[in-house]
Amino acid sequence: MSRSEGNDSSTRRGRSGSETRQLDALLQLRMPKGDRDALGAYARRLGFKNAQELVRSRLEADLAEARQQIAS
Image 1 (tube, rainbow, N blue to C red):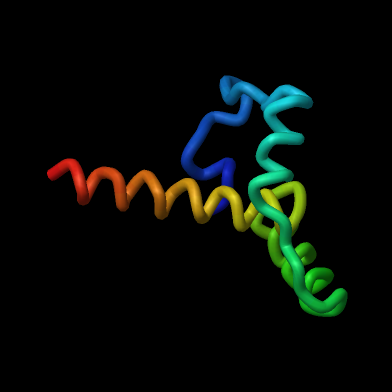
Image 2 (image 1 turned 120 degrees about the vertical axis):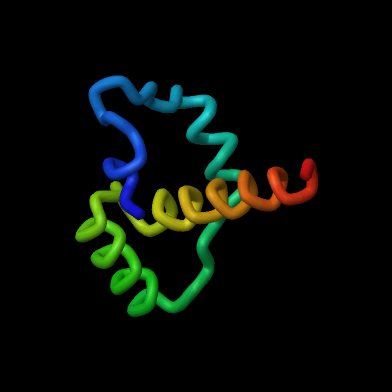
């Protein structure tokens, strides 16, 4: 699911610079340049800014689902 599918982009709050730096410190993609470039191109086709935003979005969705399953 792309970022724009689940949220109205006009009402979505952007991340501040400090939030972005904190998230970048938590998640770093280490992979061969060719793979990183391919994932980045794929992410942009889905409407994400870059590969890291795609991965972070998917992880946030998985984390929310995991928390919900634990709570029930």
